[in-house]
Amino acid sequence: MTDAKSPRARAAEKRRRLTTEAARVLHRQGVERTTLADIARAADVPVGNVYYYFKTKDELVLAALSEHGAYLDELTVRLELSEDPRDRLKGLVEAWIEQREVAARHGCPTGSLAVELGKRSDGTLDGEAGAVLGRLLDWAARQFRAMGAPGPDDLALTLVCAYQGMSLMANALRDPDVMAREGRRLLEWLDSVQATGPTTKSLSPRPR
Amino acid sequence: MTDAKSPRARAAEKRRRLTTEAARVLHRQGVERTTLADIARAADVPVGNVYYYFKTKDELVLAALSEHGAYLDELTVRLELSEDPRDRLKGLVEAWIEQREVAARHGCPTGSLAVELGKRSDGTLDGEAGAVLGRLLDWAARQFRAMGAPGPDDLALTLVCAYQGMSLMANALRDPDVMAREGRRLLEWLDSVQATGPTTKSLSPRPR
DNA sequence: GTCTATATTTAGATAGAC
DNA sequence: GTCTATCTAAATATAGAC
Image (cartoon, rainbow over all chains, first blue to last red; front, side):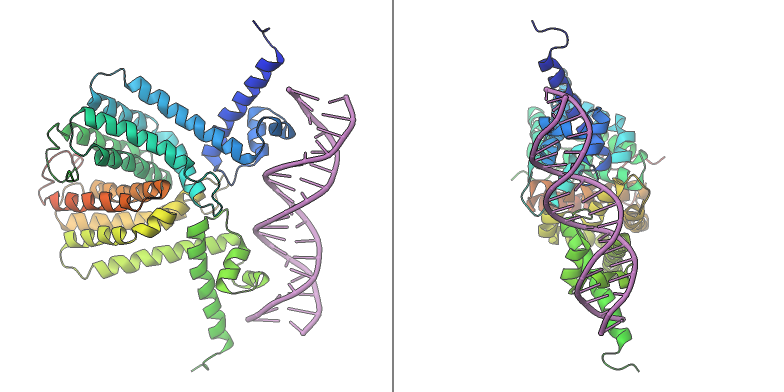
């Protein structure tokens, strides 16, 4: 109904651009080392204009976090095309391995944000990154539960911890191969998890 | 030979205090959110005076990193009192579990630093945190090798990744229990690693 | 709605008195 | 060696013209 370039549409598009670029730049440079000018430049929007769309820098950070969360939701929804929950989980790990170059350069977007936001002494944006990781944790637990695996919550925790750990280490060592090696191990581990419990007691925590 | 409070001794002591407090405060607040004033106050040294001991803020960051590295060296040396390399590794994991409250509040000191320093676009202090983690990786690999376990380097990588992952997640979720649950799993996993290889193929990567 | 100019604040770093 | 006072730079945020 609105014309091709109505003011509303153009404004919405700018907001969109600012959000996407905020997600990208904050991932690369971190929250504290990124200035509003950096994001504005990347989104091709004048600095002062940013405040028309986002009242504070933190609102941009939150928008970036939502963006990463949305990407994750999109990915998990796509994985649900598989019938087998084990294949879904393996697809998740394969996606991580594919992202190995980015992970080695900048780490996991959400994990990095969690570290940075955790350092704040004021409560600002406290737990926001944790909430996104919590959603991933829940999704993984649902898959393990669907598999009939015992202790699905603990299995999910192990999986997501492994991802955060390999991302951090790949980034710290600047070595994408860390993602490949640990990713392969996770795939084999997923194969070993049985409906009646994993093949060895060592891999899954005791059901309580 | 020098008197109880010689200028030299007092100066050395101040430098010491600045280093320890830098390590503590940077762990709590992160590099970017910590001002020199914060560290100076914690060490009970006037702000301007800091520059007599450290020419730049980065020199303080490096000193803090060395401090964390020294703590790690100290720990591994103490663990070597055990004859059995498996017990040494289990002792390491137990130490991680004991630190669960601190980990939940501020994450792993070295891991956090690695994340923050990795966000710098200039090459400043690039790879410094990775080097400390590399030392831990080497030590763990030596223990696995002494056990006669196949693929000791990969096993070490898995162990350190697990630690970084559980620290990050415990911090993100503000939940020390993450450290306890994952720590228990790691202890059981270490028990399952055999001299001829782990009990199942799923836990250790194929020897190449 | 868009953008420029600028106010405000804060932090890293230095000069120089003691 | 120690410390105060201050310079300089940069970044968030705002005021107000268009």
